[in-house]
View 1 (cartoon, rainbow, N blue to C red):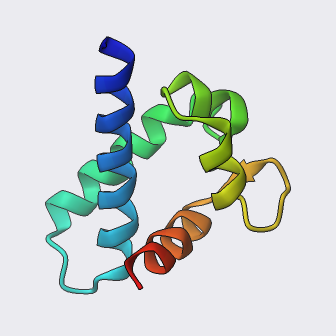
View 2: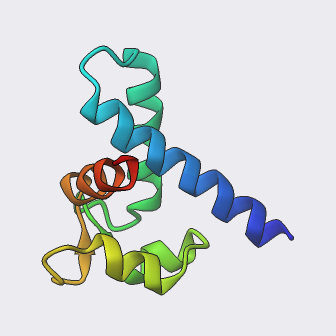
View 3: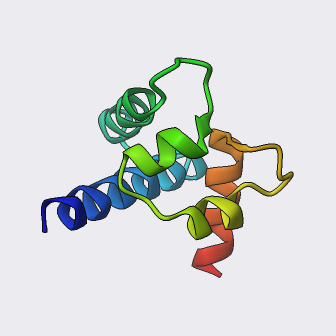
Length: 89
């Protein structure tokens, strides 16, 4: 149950990060918080999320593979924004 709650929270944060990054009128505080949560999940601080970081945040590998558009084994903020935009269509 705790893992599910973490996964839901992480998904919400990533969605907020992607949405805030796409929307020019998004409140700065929301974008800052989403960025902070991404950086917290990015435990090696390289600006991307590896599969291990993704899984540690309670996410499934399939979602990672869908978001990792160039299949380099890392999710960038740009890939998250693109996935969020695609999901919103």
